[in-house]
Image (cartoon, rainbow, N blue to C red; front, top):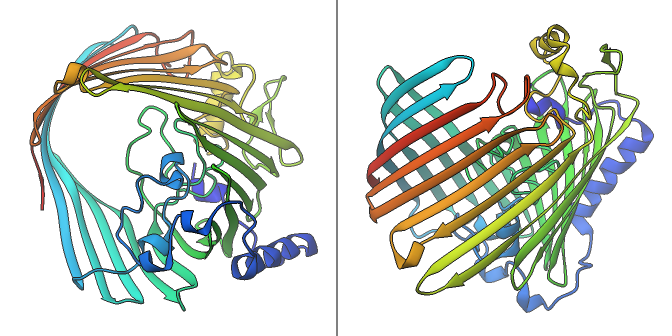
Length: 440
């Protein structure tokens, strides 16, 4: 399914109500005053740091919460060099052994070189061009992907604009994020830390002390018109609160609310999304594909993380998240209706990524075990609707910055046609050696 379709907004021929909402959103970007509590000295950006580096403030709540961390007022267009080209390369060899109850044993070995190349062009304080591409060279297959490619500019250091392919991270969820409404590259619960490919968009950013206001214009790849979304971010004491509106072209209108709260032991976060006019279909109780455009559908998630550390022995973090997906099934209808389900998937009428009603994710990571170069992790993904799960254990060793070795075991289990193990129970073992990890 094309995710862009799900975040589109009807620009031409708006109804009076929708047009009023759009106009109000645009006015907010230009003029809305700050309403959050806090000392201006604690602002997440200041006038002296405008047009700073690409990484932003790694200690800020915006980065920690996983919100839209491209703060143009912080990350815009300064730099001592007008053109900077850098990148990375790593050579990796991975051996995998898979044993599936239905298909038997399979083994594979993949040797590859991969990395990132970035070109950062800043001809003046008011303009910037950035290109970032991934590349992979492997036996029998080479690939290159443009991850980001955009132009930055500003108007009187007050309104900041980014146009082109850019990473858009809405929401606070670590594994599941229903409020991530406008990204083409959805969050992958099995690999939540993976880099994501950007979305073609125009982003208008209006910072105001501790607060931020955004409008997004996104081309409709399925037809005419532009998709429009608006979002506000406020700091309320120590909490980050966001409210977003997305109105889709010939599709759903969604309102999203998120909160992220740091604590002395870690953080907790939550998201709530209400959508009307969802165009994807679903099998109803009579096993017929039903139209849900007239229904109001809810999604919500709640999660948190806890960290405990000792300078000499351990740094252990644990996290967990529950996700209620009101757009998914509360009963695993597809098990006994494989033909109807296959037809829906073939036509692109259903979301085949997260199609169940309830999910749970849990993980534990132990870094620098007993002050060594060893790290270990355990993660569990559960589809509570069809009772399938994916259980992963890993151990990694990095004796040098340029060399690392990791061992991973993944076990999936389910009843018939479960999401995480559709062909029955499966165990997978892999050994990876990554060498010559260089940056240039």
